[in-house]
Length: 174
Ligand code: ACO
Image (cartoon, rainbow, N blue to C red):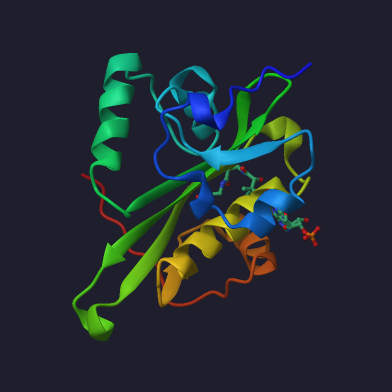
């Protein structure tokens, strides 16, 4: 029995139609893909992200305020989730955010961030579907390239998604 909350009842980060139709059509019937919702605090969003990086609980009010901050930057933050209707919990998540540059004729670059697939459903193609959906959004928004940082262990995964290694990452933590 489905416990899925319909998209129409959710406060979403952006319009569901931005997610490529081909990706939505290809998803198995027991899964649903949609934009992040303001109420996804209750649907496993932060625990899922914590497999990737520490994601301490800020509480529901701070989560909602953060969601509004992201949404206030139009056409910039695109976080998508795959939800299991049987539980209404998020099992995969990923983001592309758009950087508007002065170079490349006011070009736009897509940055893919915070990809996580629940341990229980890894290896079933969900990570690749998330990446292909984010690439579709990035390209539809006019990005001339889409980039990301990853560990050596994840290079084969991103190669399977069409990426190639280029240059190096530098980091300075506060
Ligand atoms: N090594 C080699 N191949 C891999 C690996 C790997 N580590 N991971 C996936 N693949 C291959 C799969 O075999 C599959 O190949 P196929 O198309 O030939 O069948 C293809 O890549 C797609 O795999 P998926 O099943 O879509 O991968 P999954 O759903 O497990 O998602 C992910 C991969 C996101 C890395 C997942 O394992 C995960 O959440 N890991 C923990 C968090 C993490 O490392 N996230 C990425 C951080 S980088 C970033 O956020 C930009």
